[in-house]
Length: 190
Image (tube, rainbow, N blue to C red):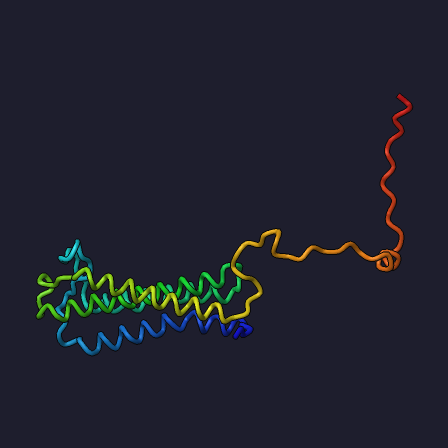
């Protein structure tokens, strides 16, 4: 079923996955706050941490990353441009990937026993975040397909539009006589 989508509907649909990811990450932070080391291991070289951030800055970065990218994709989708369907799909996927990655960072730090240097980021956590992003992107694609937009998000080809018929004689007579072509300069005087 296809539904017509106005700017407000598109903006709300674009903001939805970022809002859900932010609420999920903030809820997870509140649940594991007592088990988190300060500073947190936030950057990993392979599976071992190589950069650390305070819990306050990590929380601010989570809120900033999710609200900033959410605002960007909300603005793109509300503009109803040529690639609105793609922007909605990519925005959903990015929200799932960011939310999954930030949740993974919180979970591995909570399991470190208060020692951030002992934190390890298993590669399957990143694979799970990527899978979450792909699944949420699929939901965004399905959502975008259900919307009636003024464009399809793809370039048109010659076969897309039906050929237009020449105007009927009656339509030509109502339009009045055709203008005469401009006079050419007299070339016989040379």
